[in-house]
Image (cartoon, rainbow, N blue to C red):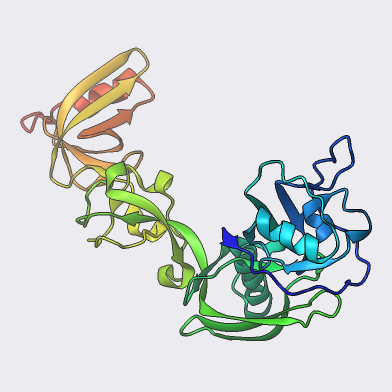
Length: 339
């Protein structure tokens, strides 16, 4: 808190109601100090600080703190100011000082940022305003203004450079009564942001992406390009189509289903028919992911059979009848000839 400076305001001010937080007078009606008050004017009057001030209530004695600030004034200073204005009896109630707060309307930093995002998105095609990320060149503090000034921030000048993403914008904030309008300038960068899965560590081509590989960040859409960003829920369990670096934002095109069967790999060939399941050894003639159809060489019959990848190193063939399954599994006999 700051200590209020005593102002030599001994003349009666224009009749303005005291805006105090009244604590109530004592039963005798004696002028009594209030422990804390809030004022809306830039000056403090006797009636703001003293209950039962009577005809002296509108006399200005001190200057108020800045908007939104709280200061203190010593009880002895108040008593001295009252005596100079003809009020000699004062019950201080044992208080040493009084807290005085200047009321204000506050425009928070988040509101300033949102207002800039709406202005830029509306003119420069940056997508939805809620997706525009703002980074200021310097710290931005809340704006405090007179409670009576209800006007919104109005854009008077705005410039945006898409290449550098830099903006330069000026707001006008109308004052209350005779108060002059204020002009507030903000500069920084702005861009359309999207939520994306970002790699914590490098990932090799074909490597399966785990949950600890990624974090979620908001990135500039221009950084990802025209491709759709990959969400974390979509990335985990997928394989990288190419080598990826730490810090890369994942795109849908960077990911593929992991290959559960590799070309020339020895696999388990499962032949299924109603009531019959045969398990054989085979050799995959091509790589495939879960659910994909690949050709497998039956090691026993030397026949090539198409099947569906059903698990790691496992290919399933579903036949309509047991006879077809048996024929697929039967080894060829080169010595056998048709007569």
